[in-house]
Amino acid sequence: MLRQYVHQFGQKLVRRQRLRPREGPEKRTARRLNTLDLIALGLGGTLGNGMYILVGEVSVYEAGPAIIICYLLAGLSTLLSGLCYAELAARVPRSGSVYLYSYVTMGQLCAFITGWNLILSYVMGTACVSRAWSAAFDSLIGNHISQAFQGTFSLNVPYFLATYADFFALGLVLLLTGLLFLGACESTLVNKVFTGLNLLVLSFTILSGFIKGDPHNWKLTEEDYRLATSGSSDTYSLGPLGSGGFLPFGFEGILQGAATCVYAFVGFDVIATTGKEVQNPRRSIPLGIVITIFIGFLAYFGVSAALTLMVPYYQIQPQSPLLQAFLHVGWNPARYVVAVGTLCALTSSLLGTMFTMPRLIYVMAEDGLLFRGLARLHGRRGTPIWAILVSGMLAAVLALLLELIDLVYLVSIGTLLAYTLVAFSVLVLRYQPEQNFSKNEKKDDEIDISQWEASPSEPASEAGTSRTLKTLWFPTSTTPTVKSGQIVYGCASLLVLLLIILSLVLAQWPSQVFSGDPVLTTVAVLLLLLITGVMAIIWRQPQDPTPLHFKVPALPVLPLVSIFVNIYLLMQMNTGTWVLFGIWMVIGFAIYFGYGIRHSLEENNDQQPPDSTSQMLDQNMPNDESG
Image (cartoon, rainbow, N blue to C red; front, top):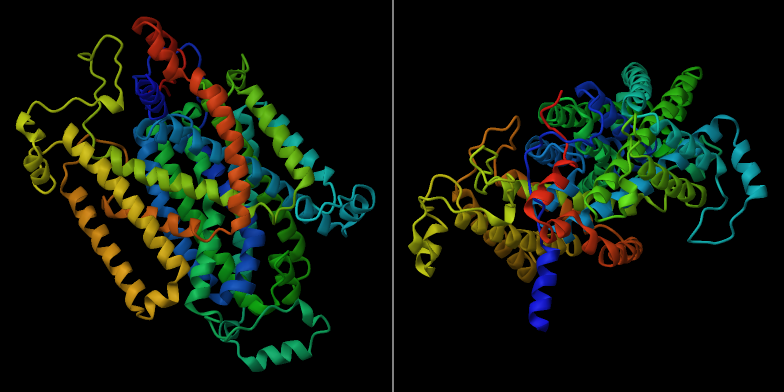
């Protein structure tokens, strides 16, 4: 009896969401967004905090002028994840982002963990950007806001809370929460205005840098550093020299800088969460993702080059790098242009994050994994009112009490985990049997990805052990079958485990591995050989020939490289960050096992007659072909 109960409980955890044709729903959000709206949303989330603060930190302490290489590596690694996002968005164009993708491919528990982590990223990200906006505005008016709050609302709780309660940041979040109530069309119109102004300011900054910049700043020496020290009365604010030149902190600094710069691109995933509100999601979502990452890379590359040409990297002020750069070259009036760009960029970044956050909560609540009241829609505008209100209030409280710097790495864990699961999902789905929504399907048109039917051409004797081993290299069919899909799923899971071990070795003992330590180098080489062998088995399996608007090239190599990069970056997180992440997960598991596992849509489907189940689900599915 206990064994049967444990088995049933385990089945609930790995239950995958059924894919159904989207026909005739009564309840849906309005489809108003086009490709330009998505690009504006993506750029608004990407070209914010990372542009006006991160570029200074990385230049001073990690890479120097080589920050342009850091952004190149970060852009390439992000593009790998973006391509995976694009294929899954073309395949499953619904709201929910990687949450939905993991639900379809990996099961309910994994989907909840993914969605819960993304909520963490969005809520903390909103708090971070609002604090940055408050600080930027405060610096422009002479720090009067912070001085007033420090004297009146000081928080004397070290290591946990900010030095003062920032009611300005709280008010900003509440104001934009109210804007989101107006709906997607109105919100994206404001976002496009701010994003357009930001791009104009960044273009001005790039041109100014190449006009006023000095190429000598890319080959600085110790003599230059001594002159800067002797000629400045504020020498404590100078950053480290390193070894000088273009690579002052070596290749290790470039790798560390690239790991940091990846976080500057995380805003693009807002595009993948808007499936229900896009006119043509199968085309617009993949196109919007790729264009957003490309434009974002060009902007970061150009601005970082302009900044390090205008100012010696050790004299850059991390808190306001671009503004101080124009003061350094004598263009004082330009600081006001940069100030406008800073506020516009942070506003669009904040709006982009807040646009995404309630929509993910809405989808999870609609599926029953979060409280169903959060899935309530406004009758006329079709906006998720309770999801907007709850997420906005939570982000506002965090913005009131927490510092930006304390949240950066916590935001990144959920994002990197999401990227990893997206790449894994692409790898699994491409090698599974085709899912067909033709009229010849069963009455309720129900297809469960965990119950793929074998191809008629697959011989029954393939169940034998010898035939199974043979099919690892010589598949019996040119199209995916149940057996080939299971092989890929098992091999992909093994590859993730091997990549975790390899990333751990490289993160903990990098110098020993590359210096030829006999034990660690042998372990790394054996892991690489195993990874190559398992990857070759996946490569031999037949792929799904279903045409899509976009497909990731070079499978299985590209998704595996993306998984490796993301896992390696996760290994860089410190212990304190993982402790906070653990606390957040404990809260999430309490919600899931106390409510979600019993109220999920899939749980209710299994307990209702097929006709009522089909009718209930059809009322909650958007029509992907509308618009």
